[in-house]
Length: 187
Image (spheres, helix red, strand yellow):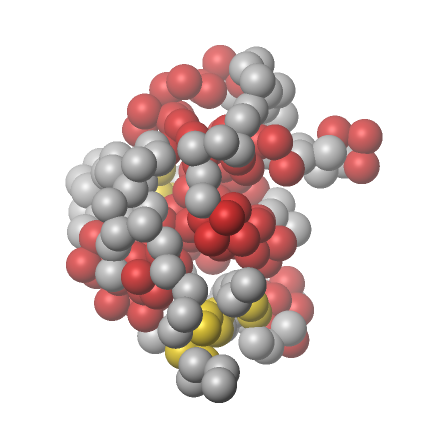
């Protein structure tokens, strides 16, 4: 099965070293397709990411980190497939991109780890969506909430959007498209 993969594993190390202007480059096979009309929403994606955390290993997700994971998932999906992964809007807030509805659902956790409160099912996701979201989590989930916040503050979609306004999907698509390469179909 074709999958999305990071083709330059040194790039995340550059980000950790403080070079937040460098982004992972994703490669996707032209045979990989996701549903063109999303049947999932921001809460489905949030639940997917929350299910990835391992509290025993010290891998937890705060509301701030969750917001950035949603942003990167939406951004890379727009860049790769020219369609949104979920229909809800992303806004430019003081601490970076935010999906308002998800923020409000989890704001009672403040800056602490969000504990999943509902059964998480993958039934609503296609195999391609699961592969895509796993890749996003593998690349960006390793960073702290504040590191992700700082990364988004150096990116055009957030920098070019007035605070408390919607970040344009076309701006996100154009920005993230530059980090996508398409593999030739294998014969």
